[in-house]
Length: 202
Image 1 (cartoon, one colour):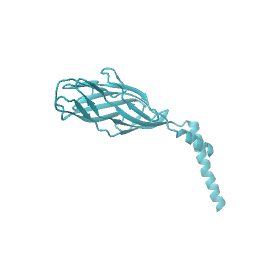
Image 2: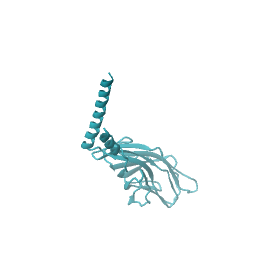
Image 3: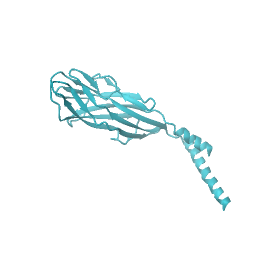
Image 4: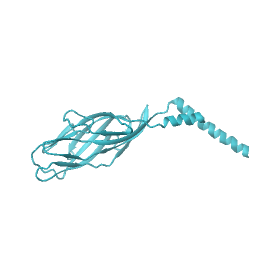
């Protein structure tokens, strides 16, 4: 019984989550694409490959249109004054690792945001739904869960800004058959012992 419990405790130890994937974007419900433009505001997609530290990860890499990395893409705003009120932007995040993700929006994270511009060419504020979505996964080697929330974006005329996100996640290895056998033996031993105690008391 002690052996089975010890193995179970080892399996339950929380580990880090390794995340890889890419993004696409679209203004006003259009088709998702690596790049999209609305008036003077342009989106460029990104790839990411990073691992949580102490179960936390911030995808906040510097903006680099055409070569974004470890963010969710970037926006570029020109210096021409436009009105963006009432327009929307949708970002799609596709995870390639960890594999076999369920929950949230399956393997994609969709978030509709509204862009507004201040008067006098003051810039654009992109207001995301900051609600964290939860994703679960279980594959041949590990199982775990993580949450992901997108941060709002403010961008000044003539500047670049990254789309960033905060992630919290934990993982644990899938029990090996030998470990599972030990856990089952421990559980069977515990049941058998309780039955013997009941018989003795009767």
